[in-house]
Image 1 (cartoon, rainbow, N blue to C red):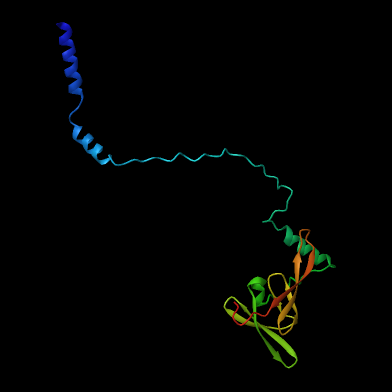
Image 2: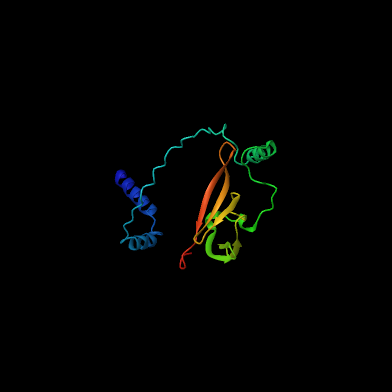
Length: 174
């Protein structure tokens, strides 16, 4: 009998701990989550970190004054091809040559001048004017194009000549 009394007491204890106080919340949660079938996608695989060694110690510093010093040294040494760094800049030298468009030609007497558009302004240029950011000297103007001689610096610091041509834009072209 003692055994039955112990089993009944244990049963009552378990029933008392069952907690009827949250039963209404459990039923509400069951009702709300009845139609939900969610699946969480797996986390992406993280690649392990691979260190990369820095091997550019022997390359020139892109932020240093080495090229400017080299230009000054070359200019003072004399000889070779070099731009005139003391010459006052013309307005069209502020624009990259790719952003300048030839929009028309004007002939006054025997001299042909070109109308070029840079940004929102139109400029009149003639042979001998400078244009572009590479010391571009206008050498010839024809009815369809403007020819320039640019001076560009190579990796060793030497100046080389490059011939560029700007074509007259079509009437509808931009």
